[in-house]
Length: 152
Image 1: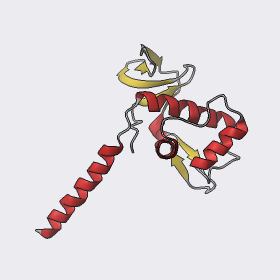
Image 2 (image 1 turned 90 degrees about the horizontal axis):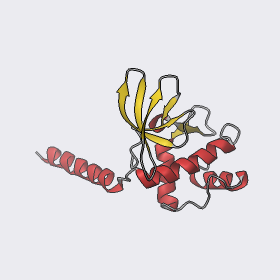
Image 3 (image 1 turned 180 degrees about the horizontal axis):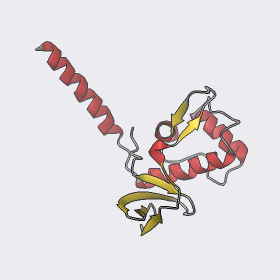
Image 4 (image 1 turned 60 degrees about the vertical axis):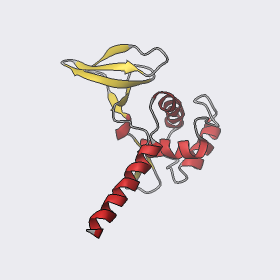
């Protein structure tokens, strides 16, 4: 996946997104994803949600779409400039999400979720590198290695 979200977290009670730096006895050390990053400790009592593990509901009862895939779809469709902001109306956010994820479950995905999606995408797009080339190069080199192995 182009955005590596394994070390990016949302922490309850703390605004914004954070990069996980290191574990401690009583929690984790995190660094804010802002222009001037600051380090702080997220206590064990805080709920830490890793973005890699978050997904959105779809109309298929047994299916969800990972947040990294949604970010990738947004990047391919809109680039770094979103047509909405986290403060856009619910109607605008809903039509934006529908353009990216047409089969999202409108009953289980709330307006607050759509606002977080827009806010998180803007932060991730600014502070987390997008590795489209590396993903396609790895796939290409893997295919050529398999072809070389088959030829031997």
